[in-house]
Length: 252
Image (cartoon, rainbow, N blue to C red; front, side):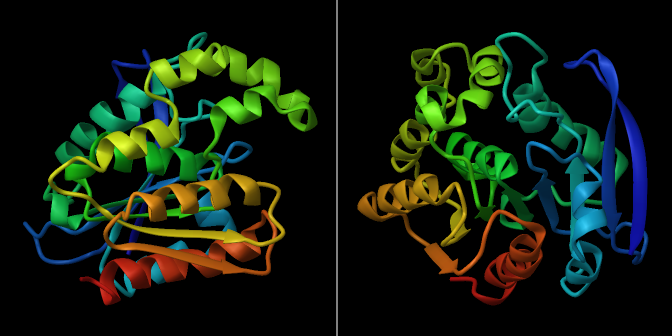
């Protein structure tokens, strides 16, 4: 595997931004299945490489991995800030495909992430269900309107207001996971979803609500996994392995 540390010019963001990538080393002209792997709120595009063994896990599947740095944006076109959602969902795949030997086929395109990155992953899956074969959401933030009003997370309120506006804006602007899930269920092609959360995670409520939503909507190819665990890298390193196994060994 080659590990590439890139800086690319984003016209959408109006700046040079960091994107790290793992690329299998193989014959010229070959294009590889690709995983867009998203970081959490307090992390950046280096975190999966530094805190997990993703290179070793991806190598076993001959899988390319794209790890963008999207700050604390919640992968959103921010009310007061930059258009990270447009960057992630539109510009980045075009840049990556122009520079790297990755597949652009939906059946070979995947996304996964943890916490804030799980939120971004679910937004991708529910907004563009036809573009992904499967996704993995670990310990995800799912209920943005709730957290904007939650008195126990008052420390989040100013930041979430800057990103999303009001709770009503979050729903109206296409940033509410549950609204997006209900809309996506009507699509003709849906990605399989592997969803995991630790039973002691502070976001357990969010993930229980997501599980109920997807089960009530009879999402095809949905798998939920739960085990004792908190919001930490021990859980995420262990479960990204389950995500990859779900992608490549449990295809339906």
